View 1 (cartoon, rainbow, N blue to C red):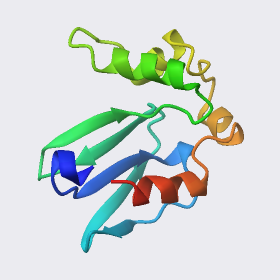
View 2: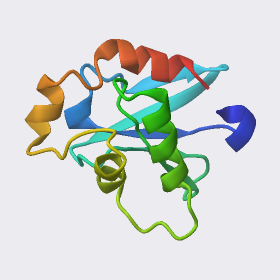
View 3: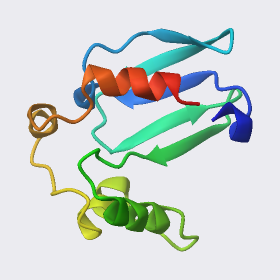
Length: 121
């Protein structure tokens, strides 16, 4: 990711979607701080500078490649005003959630996904 965005300072994750989050990772000899908040919005926030951030759509791992591609294509449309959760529902990537506990019990964001996200740049 740093190849495309430059050095990442912080990553913001949804507390309800992840287990055992570290508070920081070392990537390319740089400290990347991990923030977590119970937002439930199917996004990850990436911060480059003091106020320069990107909101990235998180596609559930059970999504097929075709459905995931449709969700990502919709997310980057210039005229898109839909929230991340609505994009996932509309593209069939995931069902509408009833509570954050549903995601946790459904297997989203296991700790091994955290390691994968931290090691992928």
